[in-house]
Amino acid sequence: MRTLNVDLGTRSYPIRIGAGLLADRAQFPEIEDRKVKIVTDANAGRRYLPGLLYTLTLMPEDVLVLPAGEPQKTWATAEKILDWLLEQRLGRDGILIALGGGVIGDMAGFCAALYQRGIDFIQVPTTLLAQVDSSVGGKTAVNHPRGKNMIGAFHQPRAVVADISTLKTLPPRELRAGLAEVIKYGMLADAEFFKWIEQHLDKLLALEPDALTKAIYRSCELKARIVAQDERESGPRALLNLGHTFGHAIETFTGYTEWLHGEAVAVGLCMAADMSAQLGWLPVESSLRCATLIQRAGLPVRPPPGMTAADFLELMGHDKKVAAGKLRLVLLRKLGVSVLSSDFDEKALHATLAHFTAP
Image (cartoon, rainbow, N blue to C red; front, side):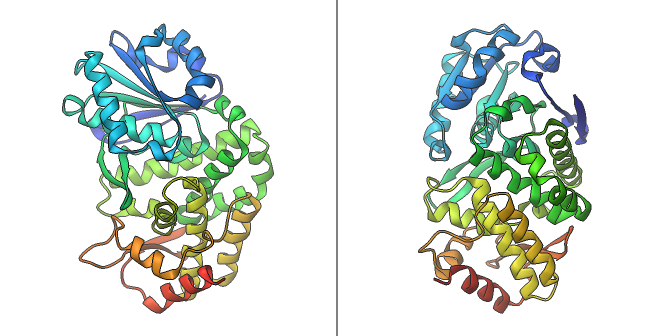
């Protein structure tokens, strides 16, 4: 088991990474002498809930099981969670556990931020995407028909417990979606890590434990370093959204039902790299390396059929990084060096959109 710390002063917390952690009560010291409730979904609940209940000596009535999937990430579901917490009479000294992927982590964290003006919660991510990205950093939210994650709050967890054993039961499509976020970290902040992913992709796809642990640890390490500098995304933290403005447009266009988040981000990464090359910032060879690695991971490299350049521009206009009416994008100066910019030649954006939406 490896541990790293997200350094945020009084809001600092550990990320524990390893195999078999859900069977080890010592990995949950934050719950001692506290009332504990769990929010999970049908998929994670079926696979991991019985063991976790045994580990933590909890009962089925301590759990709210929700339907699985991104379409559930709504204000209506958040209301259901809040109603349940009130019914359970969880006090301000209680603690909530989010057991599942990014959807559950985002929603449970959002409700923990709202409930009685904020209670503690623990992230127990069970997908690769959640382990390397969404469980770390304190971003919580629900979706809105006009845009992804548009209603949310910053609320840091008390701990993140990432048990890599859960990845053994992860559907291959979900595993590949998580790899998109791993690749993102190499692209935006660590060219050597990107090279390592290129060299070890087959081991990651085969769920080789040492390779998985290294990939998760390094991804969390890079994110923790950026979050420690900029907890509420007033500056450097926005770099973590590389590929996400394009990707969120795809998710909104498809109604959050057809594409997994990591699949949409994968296309967004290709588009961000291509636009960076169109601007002359990123060598074309580097842009091609990114697309090649994403394709090797079994991820899409083009948006859904029927999505037009006009669709992208309309939906990207609702992105949270729009400032003073101007679109800001995370782009690459070179592999491993990213920048948030609104000062770019719009011809490059239009060229990228035309290239990726061409029939």
